[in-house]
Amino acid sequence: MRFSKQRELVLQRINSAKIHPTAEWIFNEVKKEKSNISFGTVYRNLNQLIDQGLIRIIQLKGVAHYDGNMNPHDHFICNECNQIYDIDIDREDFISGIELKTHHHVSSYHIKVRGTCRKCKIN
Amino acid sequence: MRFSKQRELVLQRINSAKIHPTAEWIFNEVKKEKSNISFGTVYRNLNQLIDQGLIRIIQLKGVAHYDGNMNPHDHFICNECNQIYDIDIDREDFISGIELKTHHHVSSYHIKVRGTCRKCKIN
DNA sequence: GTAACTGCAAATCCTTTGCTATGGA
DNA sequence: TCCATAGCAAAGGATTTGCAGTTAC
Picture 1 (cartoon, rainbow over the protein chains, first blue to last red):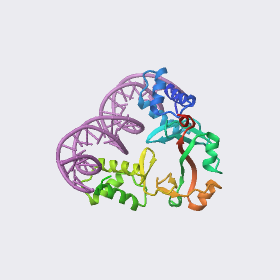
Picture 2: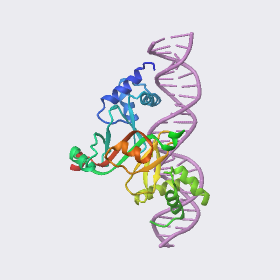
Picture 3: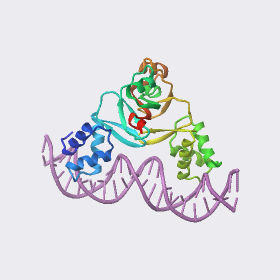
Picture 4: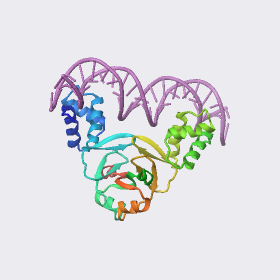
């Protein structure tokens, strides 16, 4: 992968962001420093950074958010303000544990597990 | 909510489906019985069924899938074939527990917790 | 020099919406 | 009758892609 100022800026903004930004947010941020950057470039670089394992994508209501923290961790999404918080999950006393630790009110959770299914393992 | 043949068919297909279908799959299935149904109708009914708490939506790679099983449960998504399996998660020995039970190979998981965050609780 | 990268604009994909017509209660 | 719902087609929002020019190495 060749160096590019645009990709550097995209990664920088994700890593310094306190939120889990969308492509649009990143685009607007990078634009402040490189006013002629295009959306195509932002998306192309985001996909490359994912392929390189430097960032991860979080789909929320069909909109992609990006996260530069590659340490395994989970997320708390507020139903009101839609903000995404990082959380470390302690599996004992699942919900009460989260509530005690974070002071959020938990109404539901969804665990998404990925891997290779038993059918595909054979092939 | 008034009765509609279209909505009945949409719900029926979701509930009898062994997969977690997309709007497109549901549209094609219902079309077999009601050839003039439109995509708009399918989407409108899907959103209504969600509002009524009769189905739930699962976002996967930015595409909506629908699930008629409202019992709290989680999902296993195969990296190869993208099939979505229902799973019941036993929090002890998280990954090994899933692998033993399902015979899938787990490479990662992501827990999405929802609720009201500590900031929004105040307001 | 050349392959990767860019900006731009058009295309694509999924989903929603405006409109007029239809049909359930 | 009356209003929720339908079909159709156009609009919308997010993301990808084709192309011709530019840049890192």
